[in-house]
Image (cartoon, rainbow, N blue to C red; front, side, top):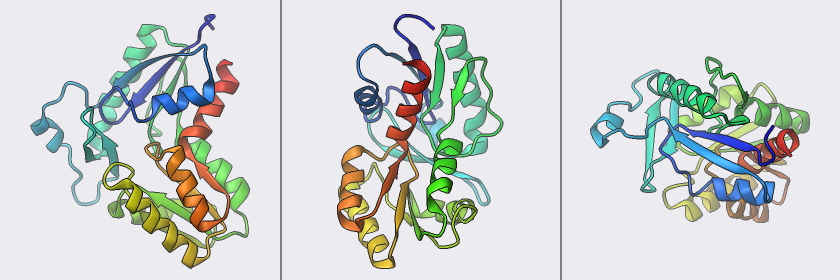
Length: 226
């Protein structure tokens, strides 16, 4: 790798992700350079609206450059995500980080591609055995698909929708109180949009260990590129 590792960061929304990358940099420390791409970069509002999920679609929630939150269909986003990876490969990055915890088995890159979903899933699986697992997801529409996935790692699972982008402080607080009342013994925040401050808000209410996707993936980047 180069003296200053160059990390490619790909969002399913629009770049730059000013809400995510600074917290990744805080974990990594000095000496890293980020180059960002977004699957929705350059699209008009009408083009983005046309990518909204339909019945039966895998639902993704992301952020636009102006801070607005949108829901898109994974099948619509996949080709544009793959294009972002190819662009970053050509730009000569050392490794690529996907800024989304959704499942994307079809993606490929010449560089190492860090996908938060399998990392988050496997780390949580190693911790969740015999525990009541609470899961925060960005939207109530994602709860059914998330419950299917997280029931593979714990018998007792409660998924709750809490947007990290819209009225986030109140949404996360409500979700944390629900998980505390349910008796969660471990919480995973299943979206790269959740912040360190949101993690602390959850932990103060649920009073159990909390796994945050963005800082977990940042530490894996540090291990590979540091």
